[in-house]
Length: 113
Image (cartoon, rainbow, N blue to C red; front, top):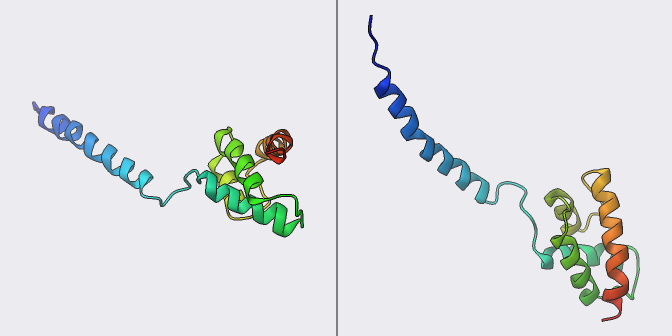
């Protein structure tokens, strides 16, 4: 029995671009966890450090300055989304350490502005 597999293989290969497109569109649709903007992170950071901790020296301009460094870093999107929501929370221990380092390094420069 000689079965010609060429038509079946061709149909499968033709489906790959459609599947890739569907996956790509789903990833871009905002349903997943995407990296928040600097403004979103700044707003959340301000909530945590000014409103929550009562630090009156921590202005919105300082929050935006620190947020730029946080967003530009290797912090996970999940951790940045926590910060953007005003949650003092990190997705893992490495992000916790990195967040602390970035804030400690950024604050002196940002507070001087």
